[in-house]
Length: 380
Image (cartoon, rainbow, N blue to C red; front, side):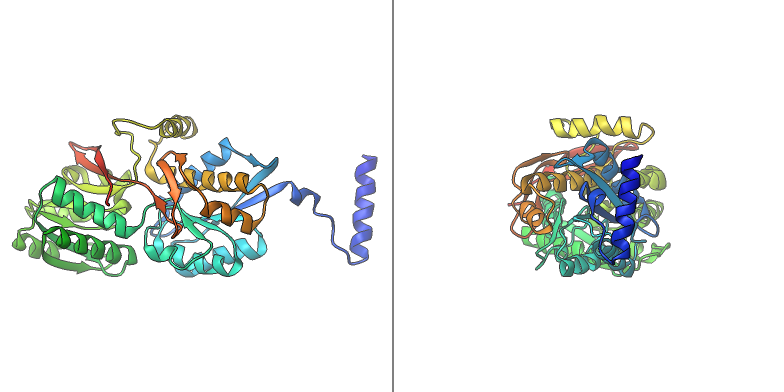
């Protein structure tokens, strides 16, 4: 007690002289910022990723002998809020590194702020190439849309033999527009024909006109890189109209709610995803460890790929801090850029020259009300 009293007197004396207090407690803490959509349109995905971050933090709460503190900010599924969240994390909270975010447009808004602050940021499921393009401090643990689009086209054309494709595009969504363009380019390059391109806007609920037009064009497959809620509604309406074409989507459809909303209409649906799923025929030791840990952490919820992405983002930063050997933003940035052959829950991860993760693209098919992991695609 006497020591604490003396410390209090010394602190008061320093403050009276206008001098800064010694940052003894702060020196024992490493702050990692997390900005994810916890409310708004993308909240479901953001919350799943946050759970993955929290699980990883629970497993590894210290690094370099210091406690890791998570500073969590809701970006509210809004670009302006995303930029403000990163501004707060870098200026007020002075975090060492940042995790986030779900949603490419949100990551681009936040990434610009992180770049000016020279604070490394690791994206979770932001797949647009613009997230890291020209950025020194932006990284990600997911593949990018040009690669995902090419993989989807390759699987549709080569593995399933689909020769005619239609597109149904949310023109108000950067992710959907970009991924559709990459699919179209690759599908045509392989020799496929794109017979129709129909558009809608985020928030639409009636897709009858677009689906009727698509049915008239008789495609083998319709590529629809929607978010899960609208995508599931589109599936239901397509089947109600008698559509026989296969519907295919991207990673944004990878959500437990897809089956809940679409019901039987989801049968036959194909989607590209990150290489993790409970139905995988073979799991790596790291994927098995994540699955086991998740079941203990959240026993009432099945492990999912979004949580695995959040989990990986935290562990990637911890690994970089260890290799950097110090809590310094530039040293950690350099270590992130040098990441190679890191075993993770989503396979062996390497950060390439453009700061993107190199990994296979998984493919899920919905069969009889269940998700089935049917394979992986590597585009060369």
